Structure formats: C-alpha cells, structure tokens
Picture 1 (cartoon, rainbow over the protein chains, first blue to last red):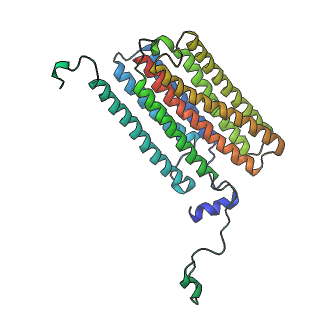
Picture 2: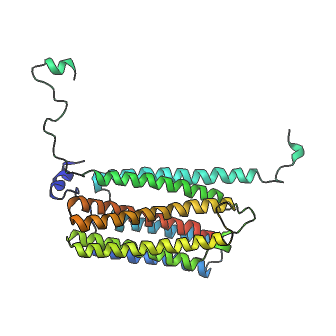
Length: 125
Length: 208
C-alpha cells in the first residue's frame, strides 16, 4: 500500500475506496439493460439464422456486460487498494480461462473419441 | 533477533518502532475482494462442469423442453433492479441519511426475494415435470450451478436483514458502513455471476 493510500485512509477509514456517483450507477444500469435485452431478443426472436453465430454474439454481449458491471457497480480500477484488487482479478481471470477452456477442450475430445461406433472393434488389440 | 543486532552500537533497524496507524478495517475491502475471487473460482468450476455435462440429457428433457425465457428475463430484471437500488442505498449511505438507506436496502431485499421466488417456482415446476437433479447429468449440473447462485442470493438477503437491524440499532457508524460496502461488493458480484448463468445456461441452452 502506498503512502498515498494511507494519507487518504486517515480521512475516511475505508481507505479512499471509490463509491461511485448517481450518474455512474445510472449509466451502468442503462448499459446493463441494453446489453441484457439484446441477447434475449436475439435468442427469443431468432433473428440470426446461424445458431453458432448467435451464440458467439450473445457471449460477446455477456463479456461486455461483465466489464460494465465491474466498472460501474464494483468500481474496479487499477488504482483501488493500491492495484492489488486488479492484480487478484487478473490472476482469477487467468485461472477461470484455464479451467473453462481446459475442461471443455479435454472433455470434448474425450467424448468425441469415446463415441460408440467410431472405432472398429476388430482393429482393437 | 540476530546477535549482531543486539551487540552492535548502532542497531540496524529491522522493523519500524512506530507502527504507522492502520485504520480499523483498512484491509477489509481487499480481503473481501479476495474472498469474492475465490468464490468466482467456485463458480468457474460449476460452469466448467455444466459446460462438459450440459449436453448429456440421458434421453430426458433438454433445455428447450424446460426453460421459459420470459421467466428468465423477468428474473434477470429483478436482479438488475436490485443492483441499482443497492447502488442508491450506497449513495444515500454516503450522505448519512439513515432512513433513506434503510428504505433502499428494503427495496433491494424485496427484489432479491422476488428473484428467489421466481427461481424456486421455476425449480418446483421443473421437478414437478420430472426434471429432477437425478434425471440426467445435464440436470445435475444445472441444479448445482443455478442452485449455488440462488444459495448465494439467499445468504445475501440474510446478510442484508442483519445489516438493516445493525443500522437501525447503531446507525451508520464506520463499522456498519464498511459492512454495507462489503455486502455491496457481494451483491454486485452475484449479478455478474448471473450474467454468466443467463448467457451460458439459459440463452445458449435454447440454442442447442
């Protein structure tokens, strides 16, 4: 923690954590409503014929909305808690990506290779 | 500590004699953030399990037979409204207005309860149709993931009631402000997890 943080910490005991403003919360809320409504509309109306394309688009909306929540509701920035909360977040995100992609990748190939009828049993030793 | 430190004329300083003042609870926010990150890992595991098992219906019902997107949309709205009302509670807390803070917390709690009620109705409906957690790997992982989120919301509401009693009794003292800020992080974090749930489980389930 830097001296700067402590200087602020004496004024407010909560160490200068950002609280956000009415404007910030409202912007975050309006963005969230838009970013929630569009994916629901895309899936419910089926505007995009290609299902895979729809899936990619709604995933992109989810990622943007998570960032919006982080910034406007959780007040994440590189300066809060002397940068440690951002560091913890980045570390967690790396682990999450490894867990998700690793699990899906390995188990997809496991399923694909264990599919009955894929291998001829006579070729087995 | 070492012999040189004791015998030397000019003792090397290994620690600052005058500990600079740490405000009480000064590290609570960071500590609570680290807890949320570990919680995030729990949800990552459950998402991974659902991602792997989500297609294994065991000839049972598929997402299309079970999910009602209108209901999920209402549910999502409830959680989103509760997020903004909690934000209003934090803003009124900053101004030191006890009654307004309590009122916004109560509104947040009602939205949270509405979310839980809708989710429980959905679960009851599914179980009534025979789509129990034991039916297929898809349903096991679905109930575990969504149920864990619902459990978090439940504990968030319990926490909120506790803090409302605390604020009613002791006012917006420093400790209560800190607790309310922790719950704020917890509550907004649950909304972030829900973004993942409605995207990966419900919307992409309907696309399968």
